[in-house]
Length: 178
Image 1 (tube, rainbow, N blue to C red):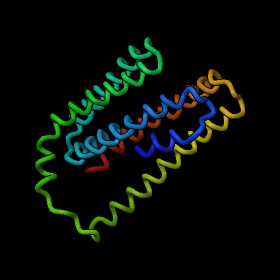
Image 2 (image 1 turned 30 degrees about the vertical axis):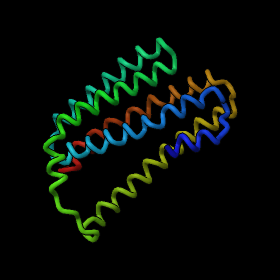
Image 3 (image 1 turned 90 degrees about the vertical axis):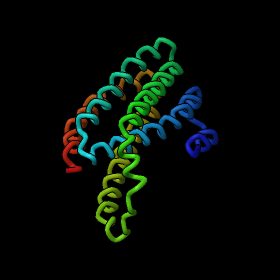
């Protein structure tokens, strides 16, 4: 909601992208909900189910995004939403026992949660800063070049090394809860 409000008040350098940027905002919430639930699966040491859902989400994203590309950017967005919803349905089916545990669990005392907050805040800030720097990089290149096609080529070129970050993050996600 806040992202859509901010975008509606902003003027973007490529005005045609505004409706698509606004269309992505709710997808961010769906992705957040999915990630939180995935970390609960990892915390419960259900790595095979985590891997299964991750693989299915990846395949759904790839297939539905490619099919959606036939219909343009709107089709890609719809494909991404369908992939997220498919993954959320699968997660909700597998999360039934965890939902019962969460509802019946006791609240953690603030003093006991300080190490978790410490780690989470530093990790979140680092991740957010990395993302902001990447977006800033693309924005600066876009303002210097001025061609959407050239910016897209540059972005794809920078995504390849960035995407390789999934290897260490996968290992960390699988073993950190233990």
